[in-house]
Image (cartoon, rainbow, N blue to C red; front, side, top):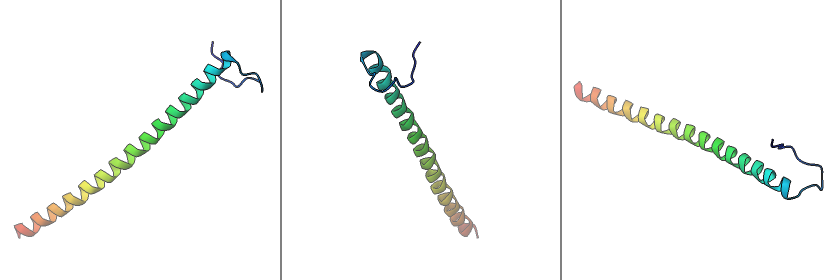
Amino acid sequence: MLNVEDPPVGRFDDETALPGALRRYVAMALNILDMLVVERYTTNQRVSGTCARRSRAINSIRSAVDH
């Protein structure tokens, strides 16, 4: 069983160093994952907006040509 709670102050040794490092790496990985999710959402919103604007512009040109 792995106890991920901090040991009492001054009680870090070889047995507790690895779980502490593992907690830090897991926290960093989750933080990076969260940032990537936000970046993907932002990029998708930006691309969707660009496509919608270009689609409206193309439809406007088609409408003008048809008349």
